[in-house]
Image 1 (cartoon, rainbow, N blue to C red):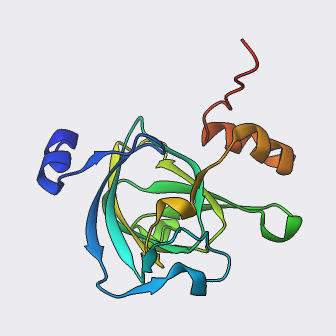
Image 2 (cartoon, rainbow, N blue to C red):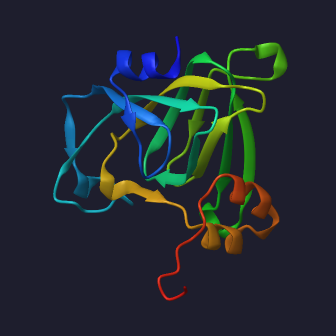
Length: 179
């Protein structure tokens, strides 16, 4: 299948904030009040206990550095391997990790990766690849109040030793006070 066929078949739409394409696949019926979830923003809404999406990246797509409050579980479905770049800045230090999501186990790829809540994540197709279809399951379920796109300047300041990777997985920070 080609990119346009995958997008049409699965009803994917562009993720304008982050990059790539997505479509919801599951949302739990059960929800919990957000005030019982420690560390989560109070939105006045209940959070679904779990939800899931399809997530597609093409050769030129980059999912820029972002994080959510809850845990994410990435699943690999088809296509080429995906490079995940994680920055765990919880607790004041910066711990980078590069992980290859895919199905070629003998090459060190793994088909599932847990990303703990609060960890920065960016992704792209591994060198030489053209596309990948993944799934992402979140618990508690996704809520916009829990989602943040990383500022390149802030991430570089916090993790100076990782500036080259951060630049690859982020957009230039906007400075409204500069031309």
